[in-house]
Image 1: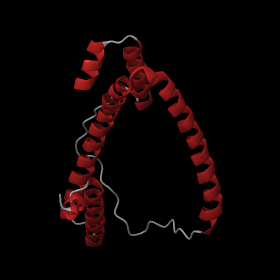
Image 2: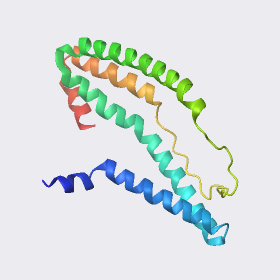
Image 3: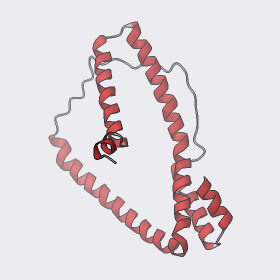
Image 4: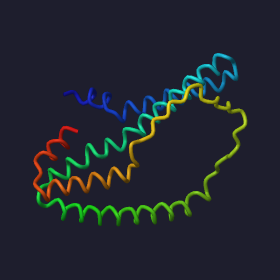
Length: 168
């Protein structure tokens, strides 16, 4: 396949383009002021943003279960040992990342010139329509569930559970 098609069709490129278009449209709408058309567009955007974020929040725990649990079952008999090593590496890297960000925050942030003024920006309107879609469980619960079900399926050689997780 052509490398240009791969690059321009990739998700990061599409996200960067959407970010650029959204920024430009936001600047244009802010420049137009508080006209009825702008307020109407903002009502639609704010409501769509809320509904999409609710849907994504609902799907994330299910995606975690759908990817983590079957992956653990495919590790086979070494799953416990590999998960233990991965857990230690993740914990150490998390501590390292926390220290790294703290040190950089103290070194870099005091030297940045950040203007907290927000004069001239439009106030976002209230939601026109609210569709609450609560997630089935938290992401941490989904992660813990995935690990325990995946390990249980491996330890018990449960072909049925492995097949269900693969289908999920």
